[in-house]
Length: 168
Image (cartoon, rainbow, N blue to C red):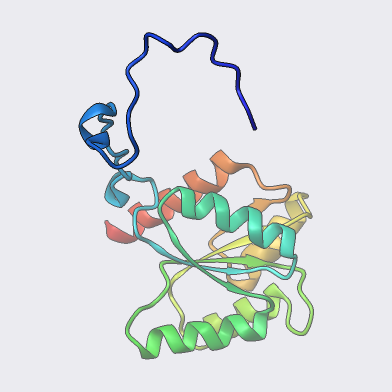
């Protein structure tokens, strides 16, 4: 690339490596946001979701809000990850559970978690938005219900609210 700078005959030239640090303007390094000031600051969230596009989107939204996210591609993997996290004494703060997944769906995974006395927050994720669908998720053991397509503000607020309720 070449750029026509015009007449530079009266301009002081800087030789590469000679005092360049003193002649360039100083900029403050951008500060990384304090995770504690973010809505989901440092929380551990397990996302049980089989769709790769939804995985990427939801992970991006949650991480941007300060959460640490682990992904399970189906209910069986979700159960294994919850067991591993509990054994390591690093339980998940929230599980976001897609209700329609292969191998083991979110309804069965939630029922099994509750049968094993899992008391953590489980938020249902589903494209089915009717009141009977919400009730089916609650009956399976979910604490709350979110519909797809995901609304960023609603996702973050429901997660934040659940985290606050857990602390209180």
